[in-house]
Length: 520
Image (cartoon, rainbow, N blue to C red; front, top):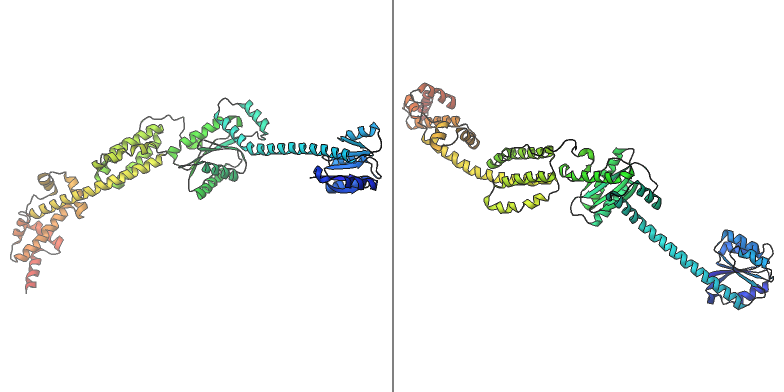
């Protein structure tokens, strides 16, 4: 319903028009009656009517003055002017304020109804047009962020765009910045969906506060910011973005930060951030990467890796895990220093993996080969290091367990030989290793000490002295030179006595006397 105000200084006309018009039929409602121009304007201010039907002659303020004053304060209000005068001048003066309906008194219901219908139709058209424009404005407002995102995406990925294009976009979208900028590129680690990209973008725009533009490009989020006066504060905010995203989504995000530059260099700054993300292979997932963190292009790749595989393979083969892990650490340090192409780096890691698998269980070779594609697809050097580290641990542990059984068997043979050869003056580590077991003496000595906790010579000496006490107990009158001969000391009973005293705490003669005394 449109609101109507009726103003005329003649009461009979007010009552007549107000009662003879079916206001509702014309989609209107009468909101007030006024008998002079001053009262009419006060009601216009109070009710804001859509239509005013007014006499042109009224006390205080005539109809034309009312039209002029209302036009200034309520330009949407439409007027129907009533007058007993037919002069063109009045109609002309009213028309300059947009009054289209000028009815001469006496008028009738039909003419007023027709004027109302025409004004209502006009107001309908205007409302429809305004609603359409408002709807278009709202839709444009909703679309504008997406359009701006597309502009940023095109500007950093299309090499044909230049400074003139940016000036056009700045004018079209009323971009109000012309400053040094930085680009920030975010990459989510793991299986990322659009929800995650949207979340990173929103979190970044919220924490960074003064983002200029932002968009998503493939699996990345790109944000354009003004180069800050305090770089340390920017790094803290970037850390807060990572922490906030990890808190809500339990996922890590790697951030590449470009160096500062003019907005027209946005494409090269974007390429810089892509290069930074590429080097996350060497710098691990997560964290913040700048061009300073990447390897200097002034130092060309050496093309080869300075690392001896046997340094790792030998301890793995023998089951020495600690030494193997140290060698693996050195291998990956060498890969970092080499600054090779990522494909070449992966080839070295795959080559080492295959060499390691040859030291493991032959029955698992096919299983190991099936893991090679997994190794190829790894995105960081750290992931490859963890993978090879587990392989080293598994194979070294298996070899250690096998070697323990093997070593125990060898040492058991050595102990049997010692027991059998205690009277042999030639009994020595070299004798047992070369003449009886056909092994390297140094290796056998280390193996023997590892298993028994004793050096071979010490163990033999203790075994001989223990056998000497047993022989004294069995034959109390045995001669010392006999003991020396029968226990491998040959014709040197004096040396035998010295060793006996050192091991037992007394000379053989004193030990025999003690044994005789205890017998009584």
